[in-house]
Length: 219
Length: 100
Image (cartoon, rainbow over all chains, first blue to last red):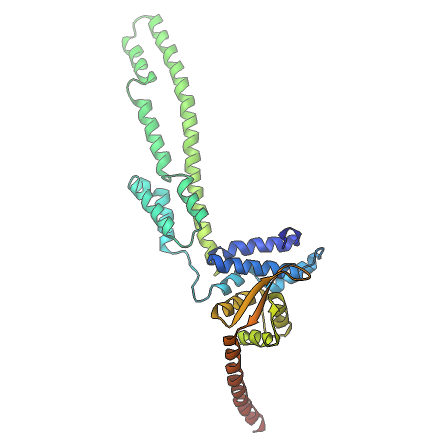
């Protein structure tokens, strides 16, 4: 059967059903979607009006209700302590115990039955390390900028300390300001990367919470 | 009870999902949401009281046809007996009430 010939409202309904049915075991899920798809194409001939489509969908009932009916006995998995702890560890676990804290979060993420494979990949790969990553980058940048041998710092002190000829000093100032310019553009670039990583890490947490709550909405 | 209505509908031969669902929902008071009947049909299949086959239809999209199995027939027979005696018992008391 061709889903493309379905009424747009029916197509939208199928999309919502597929989303809701993600919690069902694969075989049951496919059978259910197949049947509802077939139902829609039987009930709605090509060229059906919007009112007809709405009526058919109303008689069918909410996708969440149908999915809940398909999963009785096997109680619907709901987000619990595991999901909360996983989300928190993924975000800031690496700050509490470097590396290990975040890995613990990943283990819990993959152990959860609430999140789908896609959620788990997003949770793991979008910002590996969570907020610890931008913090770590900031630390690296800070130590690089202040470490001896980097171009600015030392030149400044030299020029101030010696303070001999005007020529010498101006030379040093020109050199160091050139250096400062270079580091500042690098610092801005780094700052942007840091901010993006931090925002993405927080956005990932929100995403995971939203996905975990989706199941509660069905139940 | 709807499960047994499905089995009863299949006594006369195989029917496809949409047909079953529409027949059931046309009787007022039986079904609140047509969609929830499909998971029910799937449970009946897993319980082995009906079997299904997915076939092209002469008109329209391919359909999943449902058919009673021998165990389905037995289940329906047993239920029919129980239901009849249950209904008679309830009727007995209801009629006594109105007579009194």
